[in-house]
Image 1 (cartoon, rainbow, N blue to C red):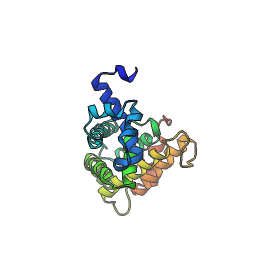
Image 2: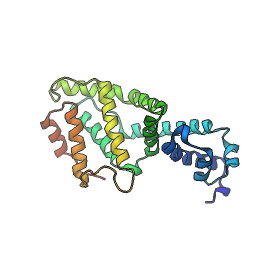
Image 3: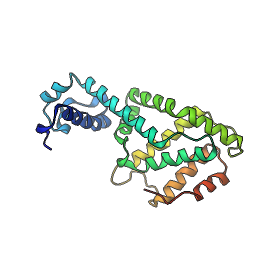
Length: 223
């Protein structure tokens, strides 16, 4: 549908969608309203009829990205307080990351990476929310896994465990964003999934036997 025929609400949404990609690439300081207008297929004058300033656009983008983040966490579900629950959360994180550009929140994660290379403000917001959303359940799962003997050695700080898993997921997602994967992983998707789960599981201290048992029970890789 041509932009000129969009309703005011749809046009506003189109501007926000275009702005996500621009902010993801250039950050708040580097992005220009001319770039956003061009990406949205509108004039700057029309853009400013919907938003008073670039900051107002950025705030609208943040609201949508937070909604996307909530939806992603909701789709992944809460970690069950058990060893298998802990491993299943890792599996879901890995499979989400393997979607690359097809992942629902990919532009938001591009903004995180851009923020980390800039002033870090946006990344701090997103990581604080991710910690608040996932820490309680992950902590219970870690304690349960240690209690049944599936975790050996020193138990990681749950806060750091959440952060490290987020780092792995974010970088896997970004590496697979382009049509040609930026990181030369083994192109066998089954092996990528298996190795990523092994890497994260071992990092948390889960025993080899419990990880292997979990992997053996997995259905074929959906990616």
